[in-house]
Amino acid sequence: MIEPRAYRPEVPAGRQAEDARAAVSLPWLTRLRWGTVAGQLVTVAVGHWTLGLGLPLPPVLGLIGATAVTNLALMRWLRDGGTAGPGLCGAVLVLDTLVLTALLHASGGPFNPFSVLYLVYIMLAAVVLGAAWTWSLAALSVACYVALFLLPVPAGVHLAHGEGALSLHLWGMLVAFVVAAVLTAYFVVRLSAAIERRDAEIAAMREQATRTERLAALTTLAAGAAHELGTPLATIAVAATELEHVLERLATAGAGPLRDDARLIRAEVERCRRILDRMASDAGETAGEAPALVPVDGLVRDVLDALPAEDAGRVHVEGLPLGVISALPRRAVAGAITSLVRNALDATRAPEPVRLRVEASDSALHVEVLDDGPGMTAEVLARAVEPFFSTKPPGKGMGLGLFLARTLAEGLGGRLTLTSAPGEGATAALDLPRVTLAGASRA
Image (cartoon, rainbow, N blue to C red; front, side):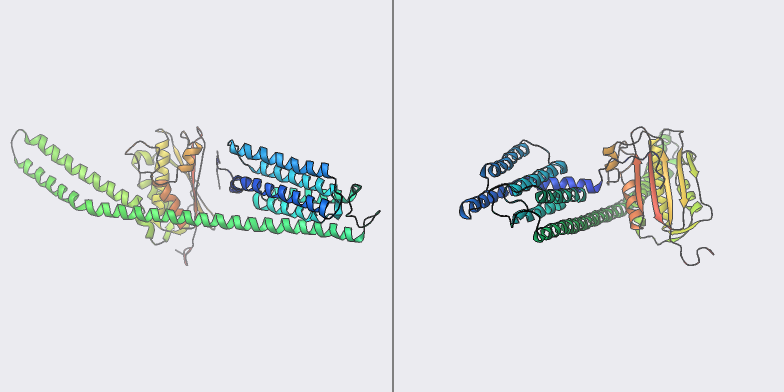
């Protein structure tokens, strides 16, 4: 796709999902940390006074107190309106992993069976933070667990299996932990990514269904308006014509201005009819049009013929692939391209040109409309395809052209892409699948 001066204000979908998960998960994580503090206190009390393990209480209680103090600070920060992001959640999990390592070292080192709690933080990172943080925390957990084997066990703790070199049992624990950490990180990350893709697909389907419902409502409204107003407009036109004929037969001095008024009434009625026809066409009346073999140069001719002569003269056609034939709903596609060209002409001061670039491959037809107008801000660009959204003066448009062009493109299996930046013009790219019917080449 040719996208000069491309401007992408949107944040990537994966980044948005991580930010949303972090914002929801951080308050929940603070509650989980309070549960962790309570569980650690109970475990220390049972181990030291009930089982007689001889734990070093000052460093152990100091580490648990550090977790409580940081959690209090985190809760206050959130209560004061602080923003929860992936970086903060990741920092909290890193801190908790280091605190867990210090607690394990102070209470038995690699012999402490609670080393399996490393996996909890890995799974939390996978669910809340995504792949990068998950693998980083998994690597940190493995490094911390290996450090427990290398550091000497504090004196007085009675969890060790024996003195001296690492036993075969401890090596087995290390290998099992590394394998479990890697597999947990891998499968949870894959599962989270699959769920995220499914949610994105469901959201896209819902958005498509909403646009289809809006299009159906617009079509019904336009058809109803054309039907209801057609009869009274026809009556007014007939009455104006008869009045004009009667006034032509009168020789009075005041008949001339009255005859001009009658002609004006008839001209305005014709204008109303054209507006109704255009509204019905713009609202998707051609949505059910059957595909037909269309030469691309003929399609471009339809677009230029739909424009006033002075506007058509400002359109510079580039890269027209002569002789290419596509199976498309001709009227609908020509109307969509015409809407894009009209938007570009409205955004560009006369007599500045607008470029209509047409390219074709074996599988797709690519149409670009480029203008050198004032461009669009990020906010306008994000809303440009919404129905009834328009930056034109009142009476210059209904704000349906881009919405219907996008709906048509997606209905045909293509897409509409808008790129713009303030002061750098805009580009509307329409990609449509090029369906070749049987015998198209011979035709």
